[in-house]
Length: 382
Image 1 (cartoon, rainbow, N blue to C red):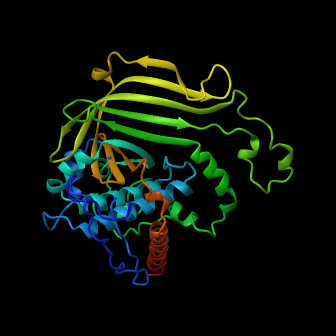
Image 2: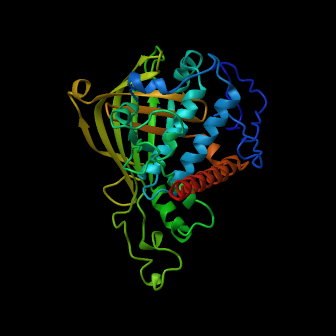
Image 3: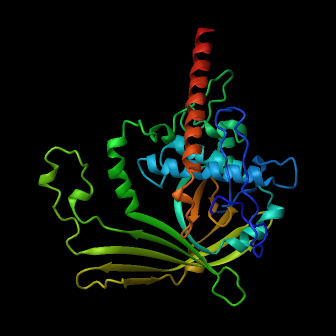
């Protein structure tokens, strides 16, 4: 199953028994059995935030961090006003904190070669966010260590480091994702819109040497047929407009494929992949002319200077049989991406593990907000 620990080597198919993670010391009532199984250039100064007491990673800690990150990612994407493209600063910082937690629990000297072997396949984007890199925060007076990453500061995105300052802990989309959320009546509408767009990254090894040489980014869109697909069920007079067509051409599916030439640039100290955009293809399927039901390419564009002008890199921070995490970094910002393998069943959450972890995360955030508020009151009174 997707929550079983991954084999330590690609040829070992004997999965060990599920790992049961002890309850969080801060919340002993959440004794959750967290089992396991199971993304671009990092400036050298941002890697210094991760320290390890040992050169050997702890599988239980890695799997706990992975499951917490996946629970957070899916919950934020569902509750975020912009879906998988996280836009709220509090959501972005929370995601960054959990990615760093997972990154800090692994040992590149042990894992990166295994990660490279597991990279190939089709990966569905769970969520992505652009956040300030560590170098930018330090230049602007912020901190690049510890719990500050989980707390969007009171002034803009960066912490107020003046003496005695109390940094306000802001709520993320976690607090709006419970069953008692005031936005619950709109959840069905938002879920339909979010499901109409799927982003997939295809990592391929097409050469005989079995080396990664192609990465395609695929944006797939499924049009809504009628206005009834987007109107809330209890909307007054909604029945008068539910049959209004939104898709007169009968398009059933559309894809934009960005094709990249790829090469694994390094394995240590970071697993880095270099990509160059070489061409784009637009594919459309539909029920009416001139579309084909199976889909056909309507437009193709070659980038003759792709290998010279449209290049970039991404670093794979973690990958197993189900989950993959990458980072693309620039001088000021970094983009984080969390993927699940396209044929994985891990998001079905049959055992309710992800939902249990999401509930724990909501409790943790509530307690953090309450402590922050109490600290500000105490400072004002004092």
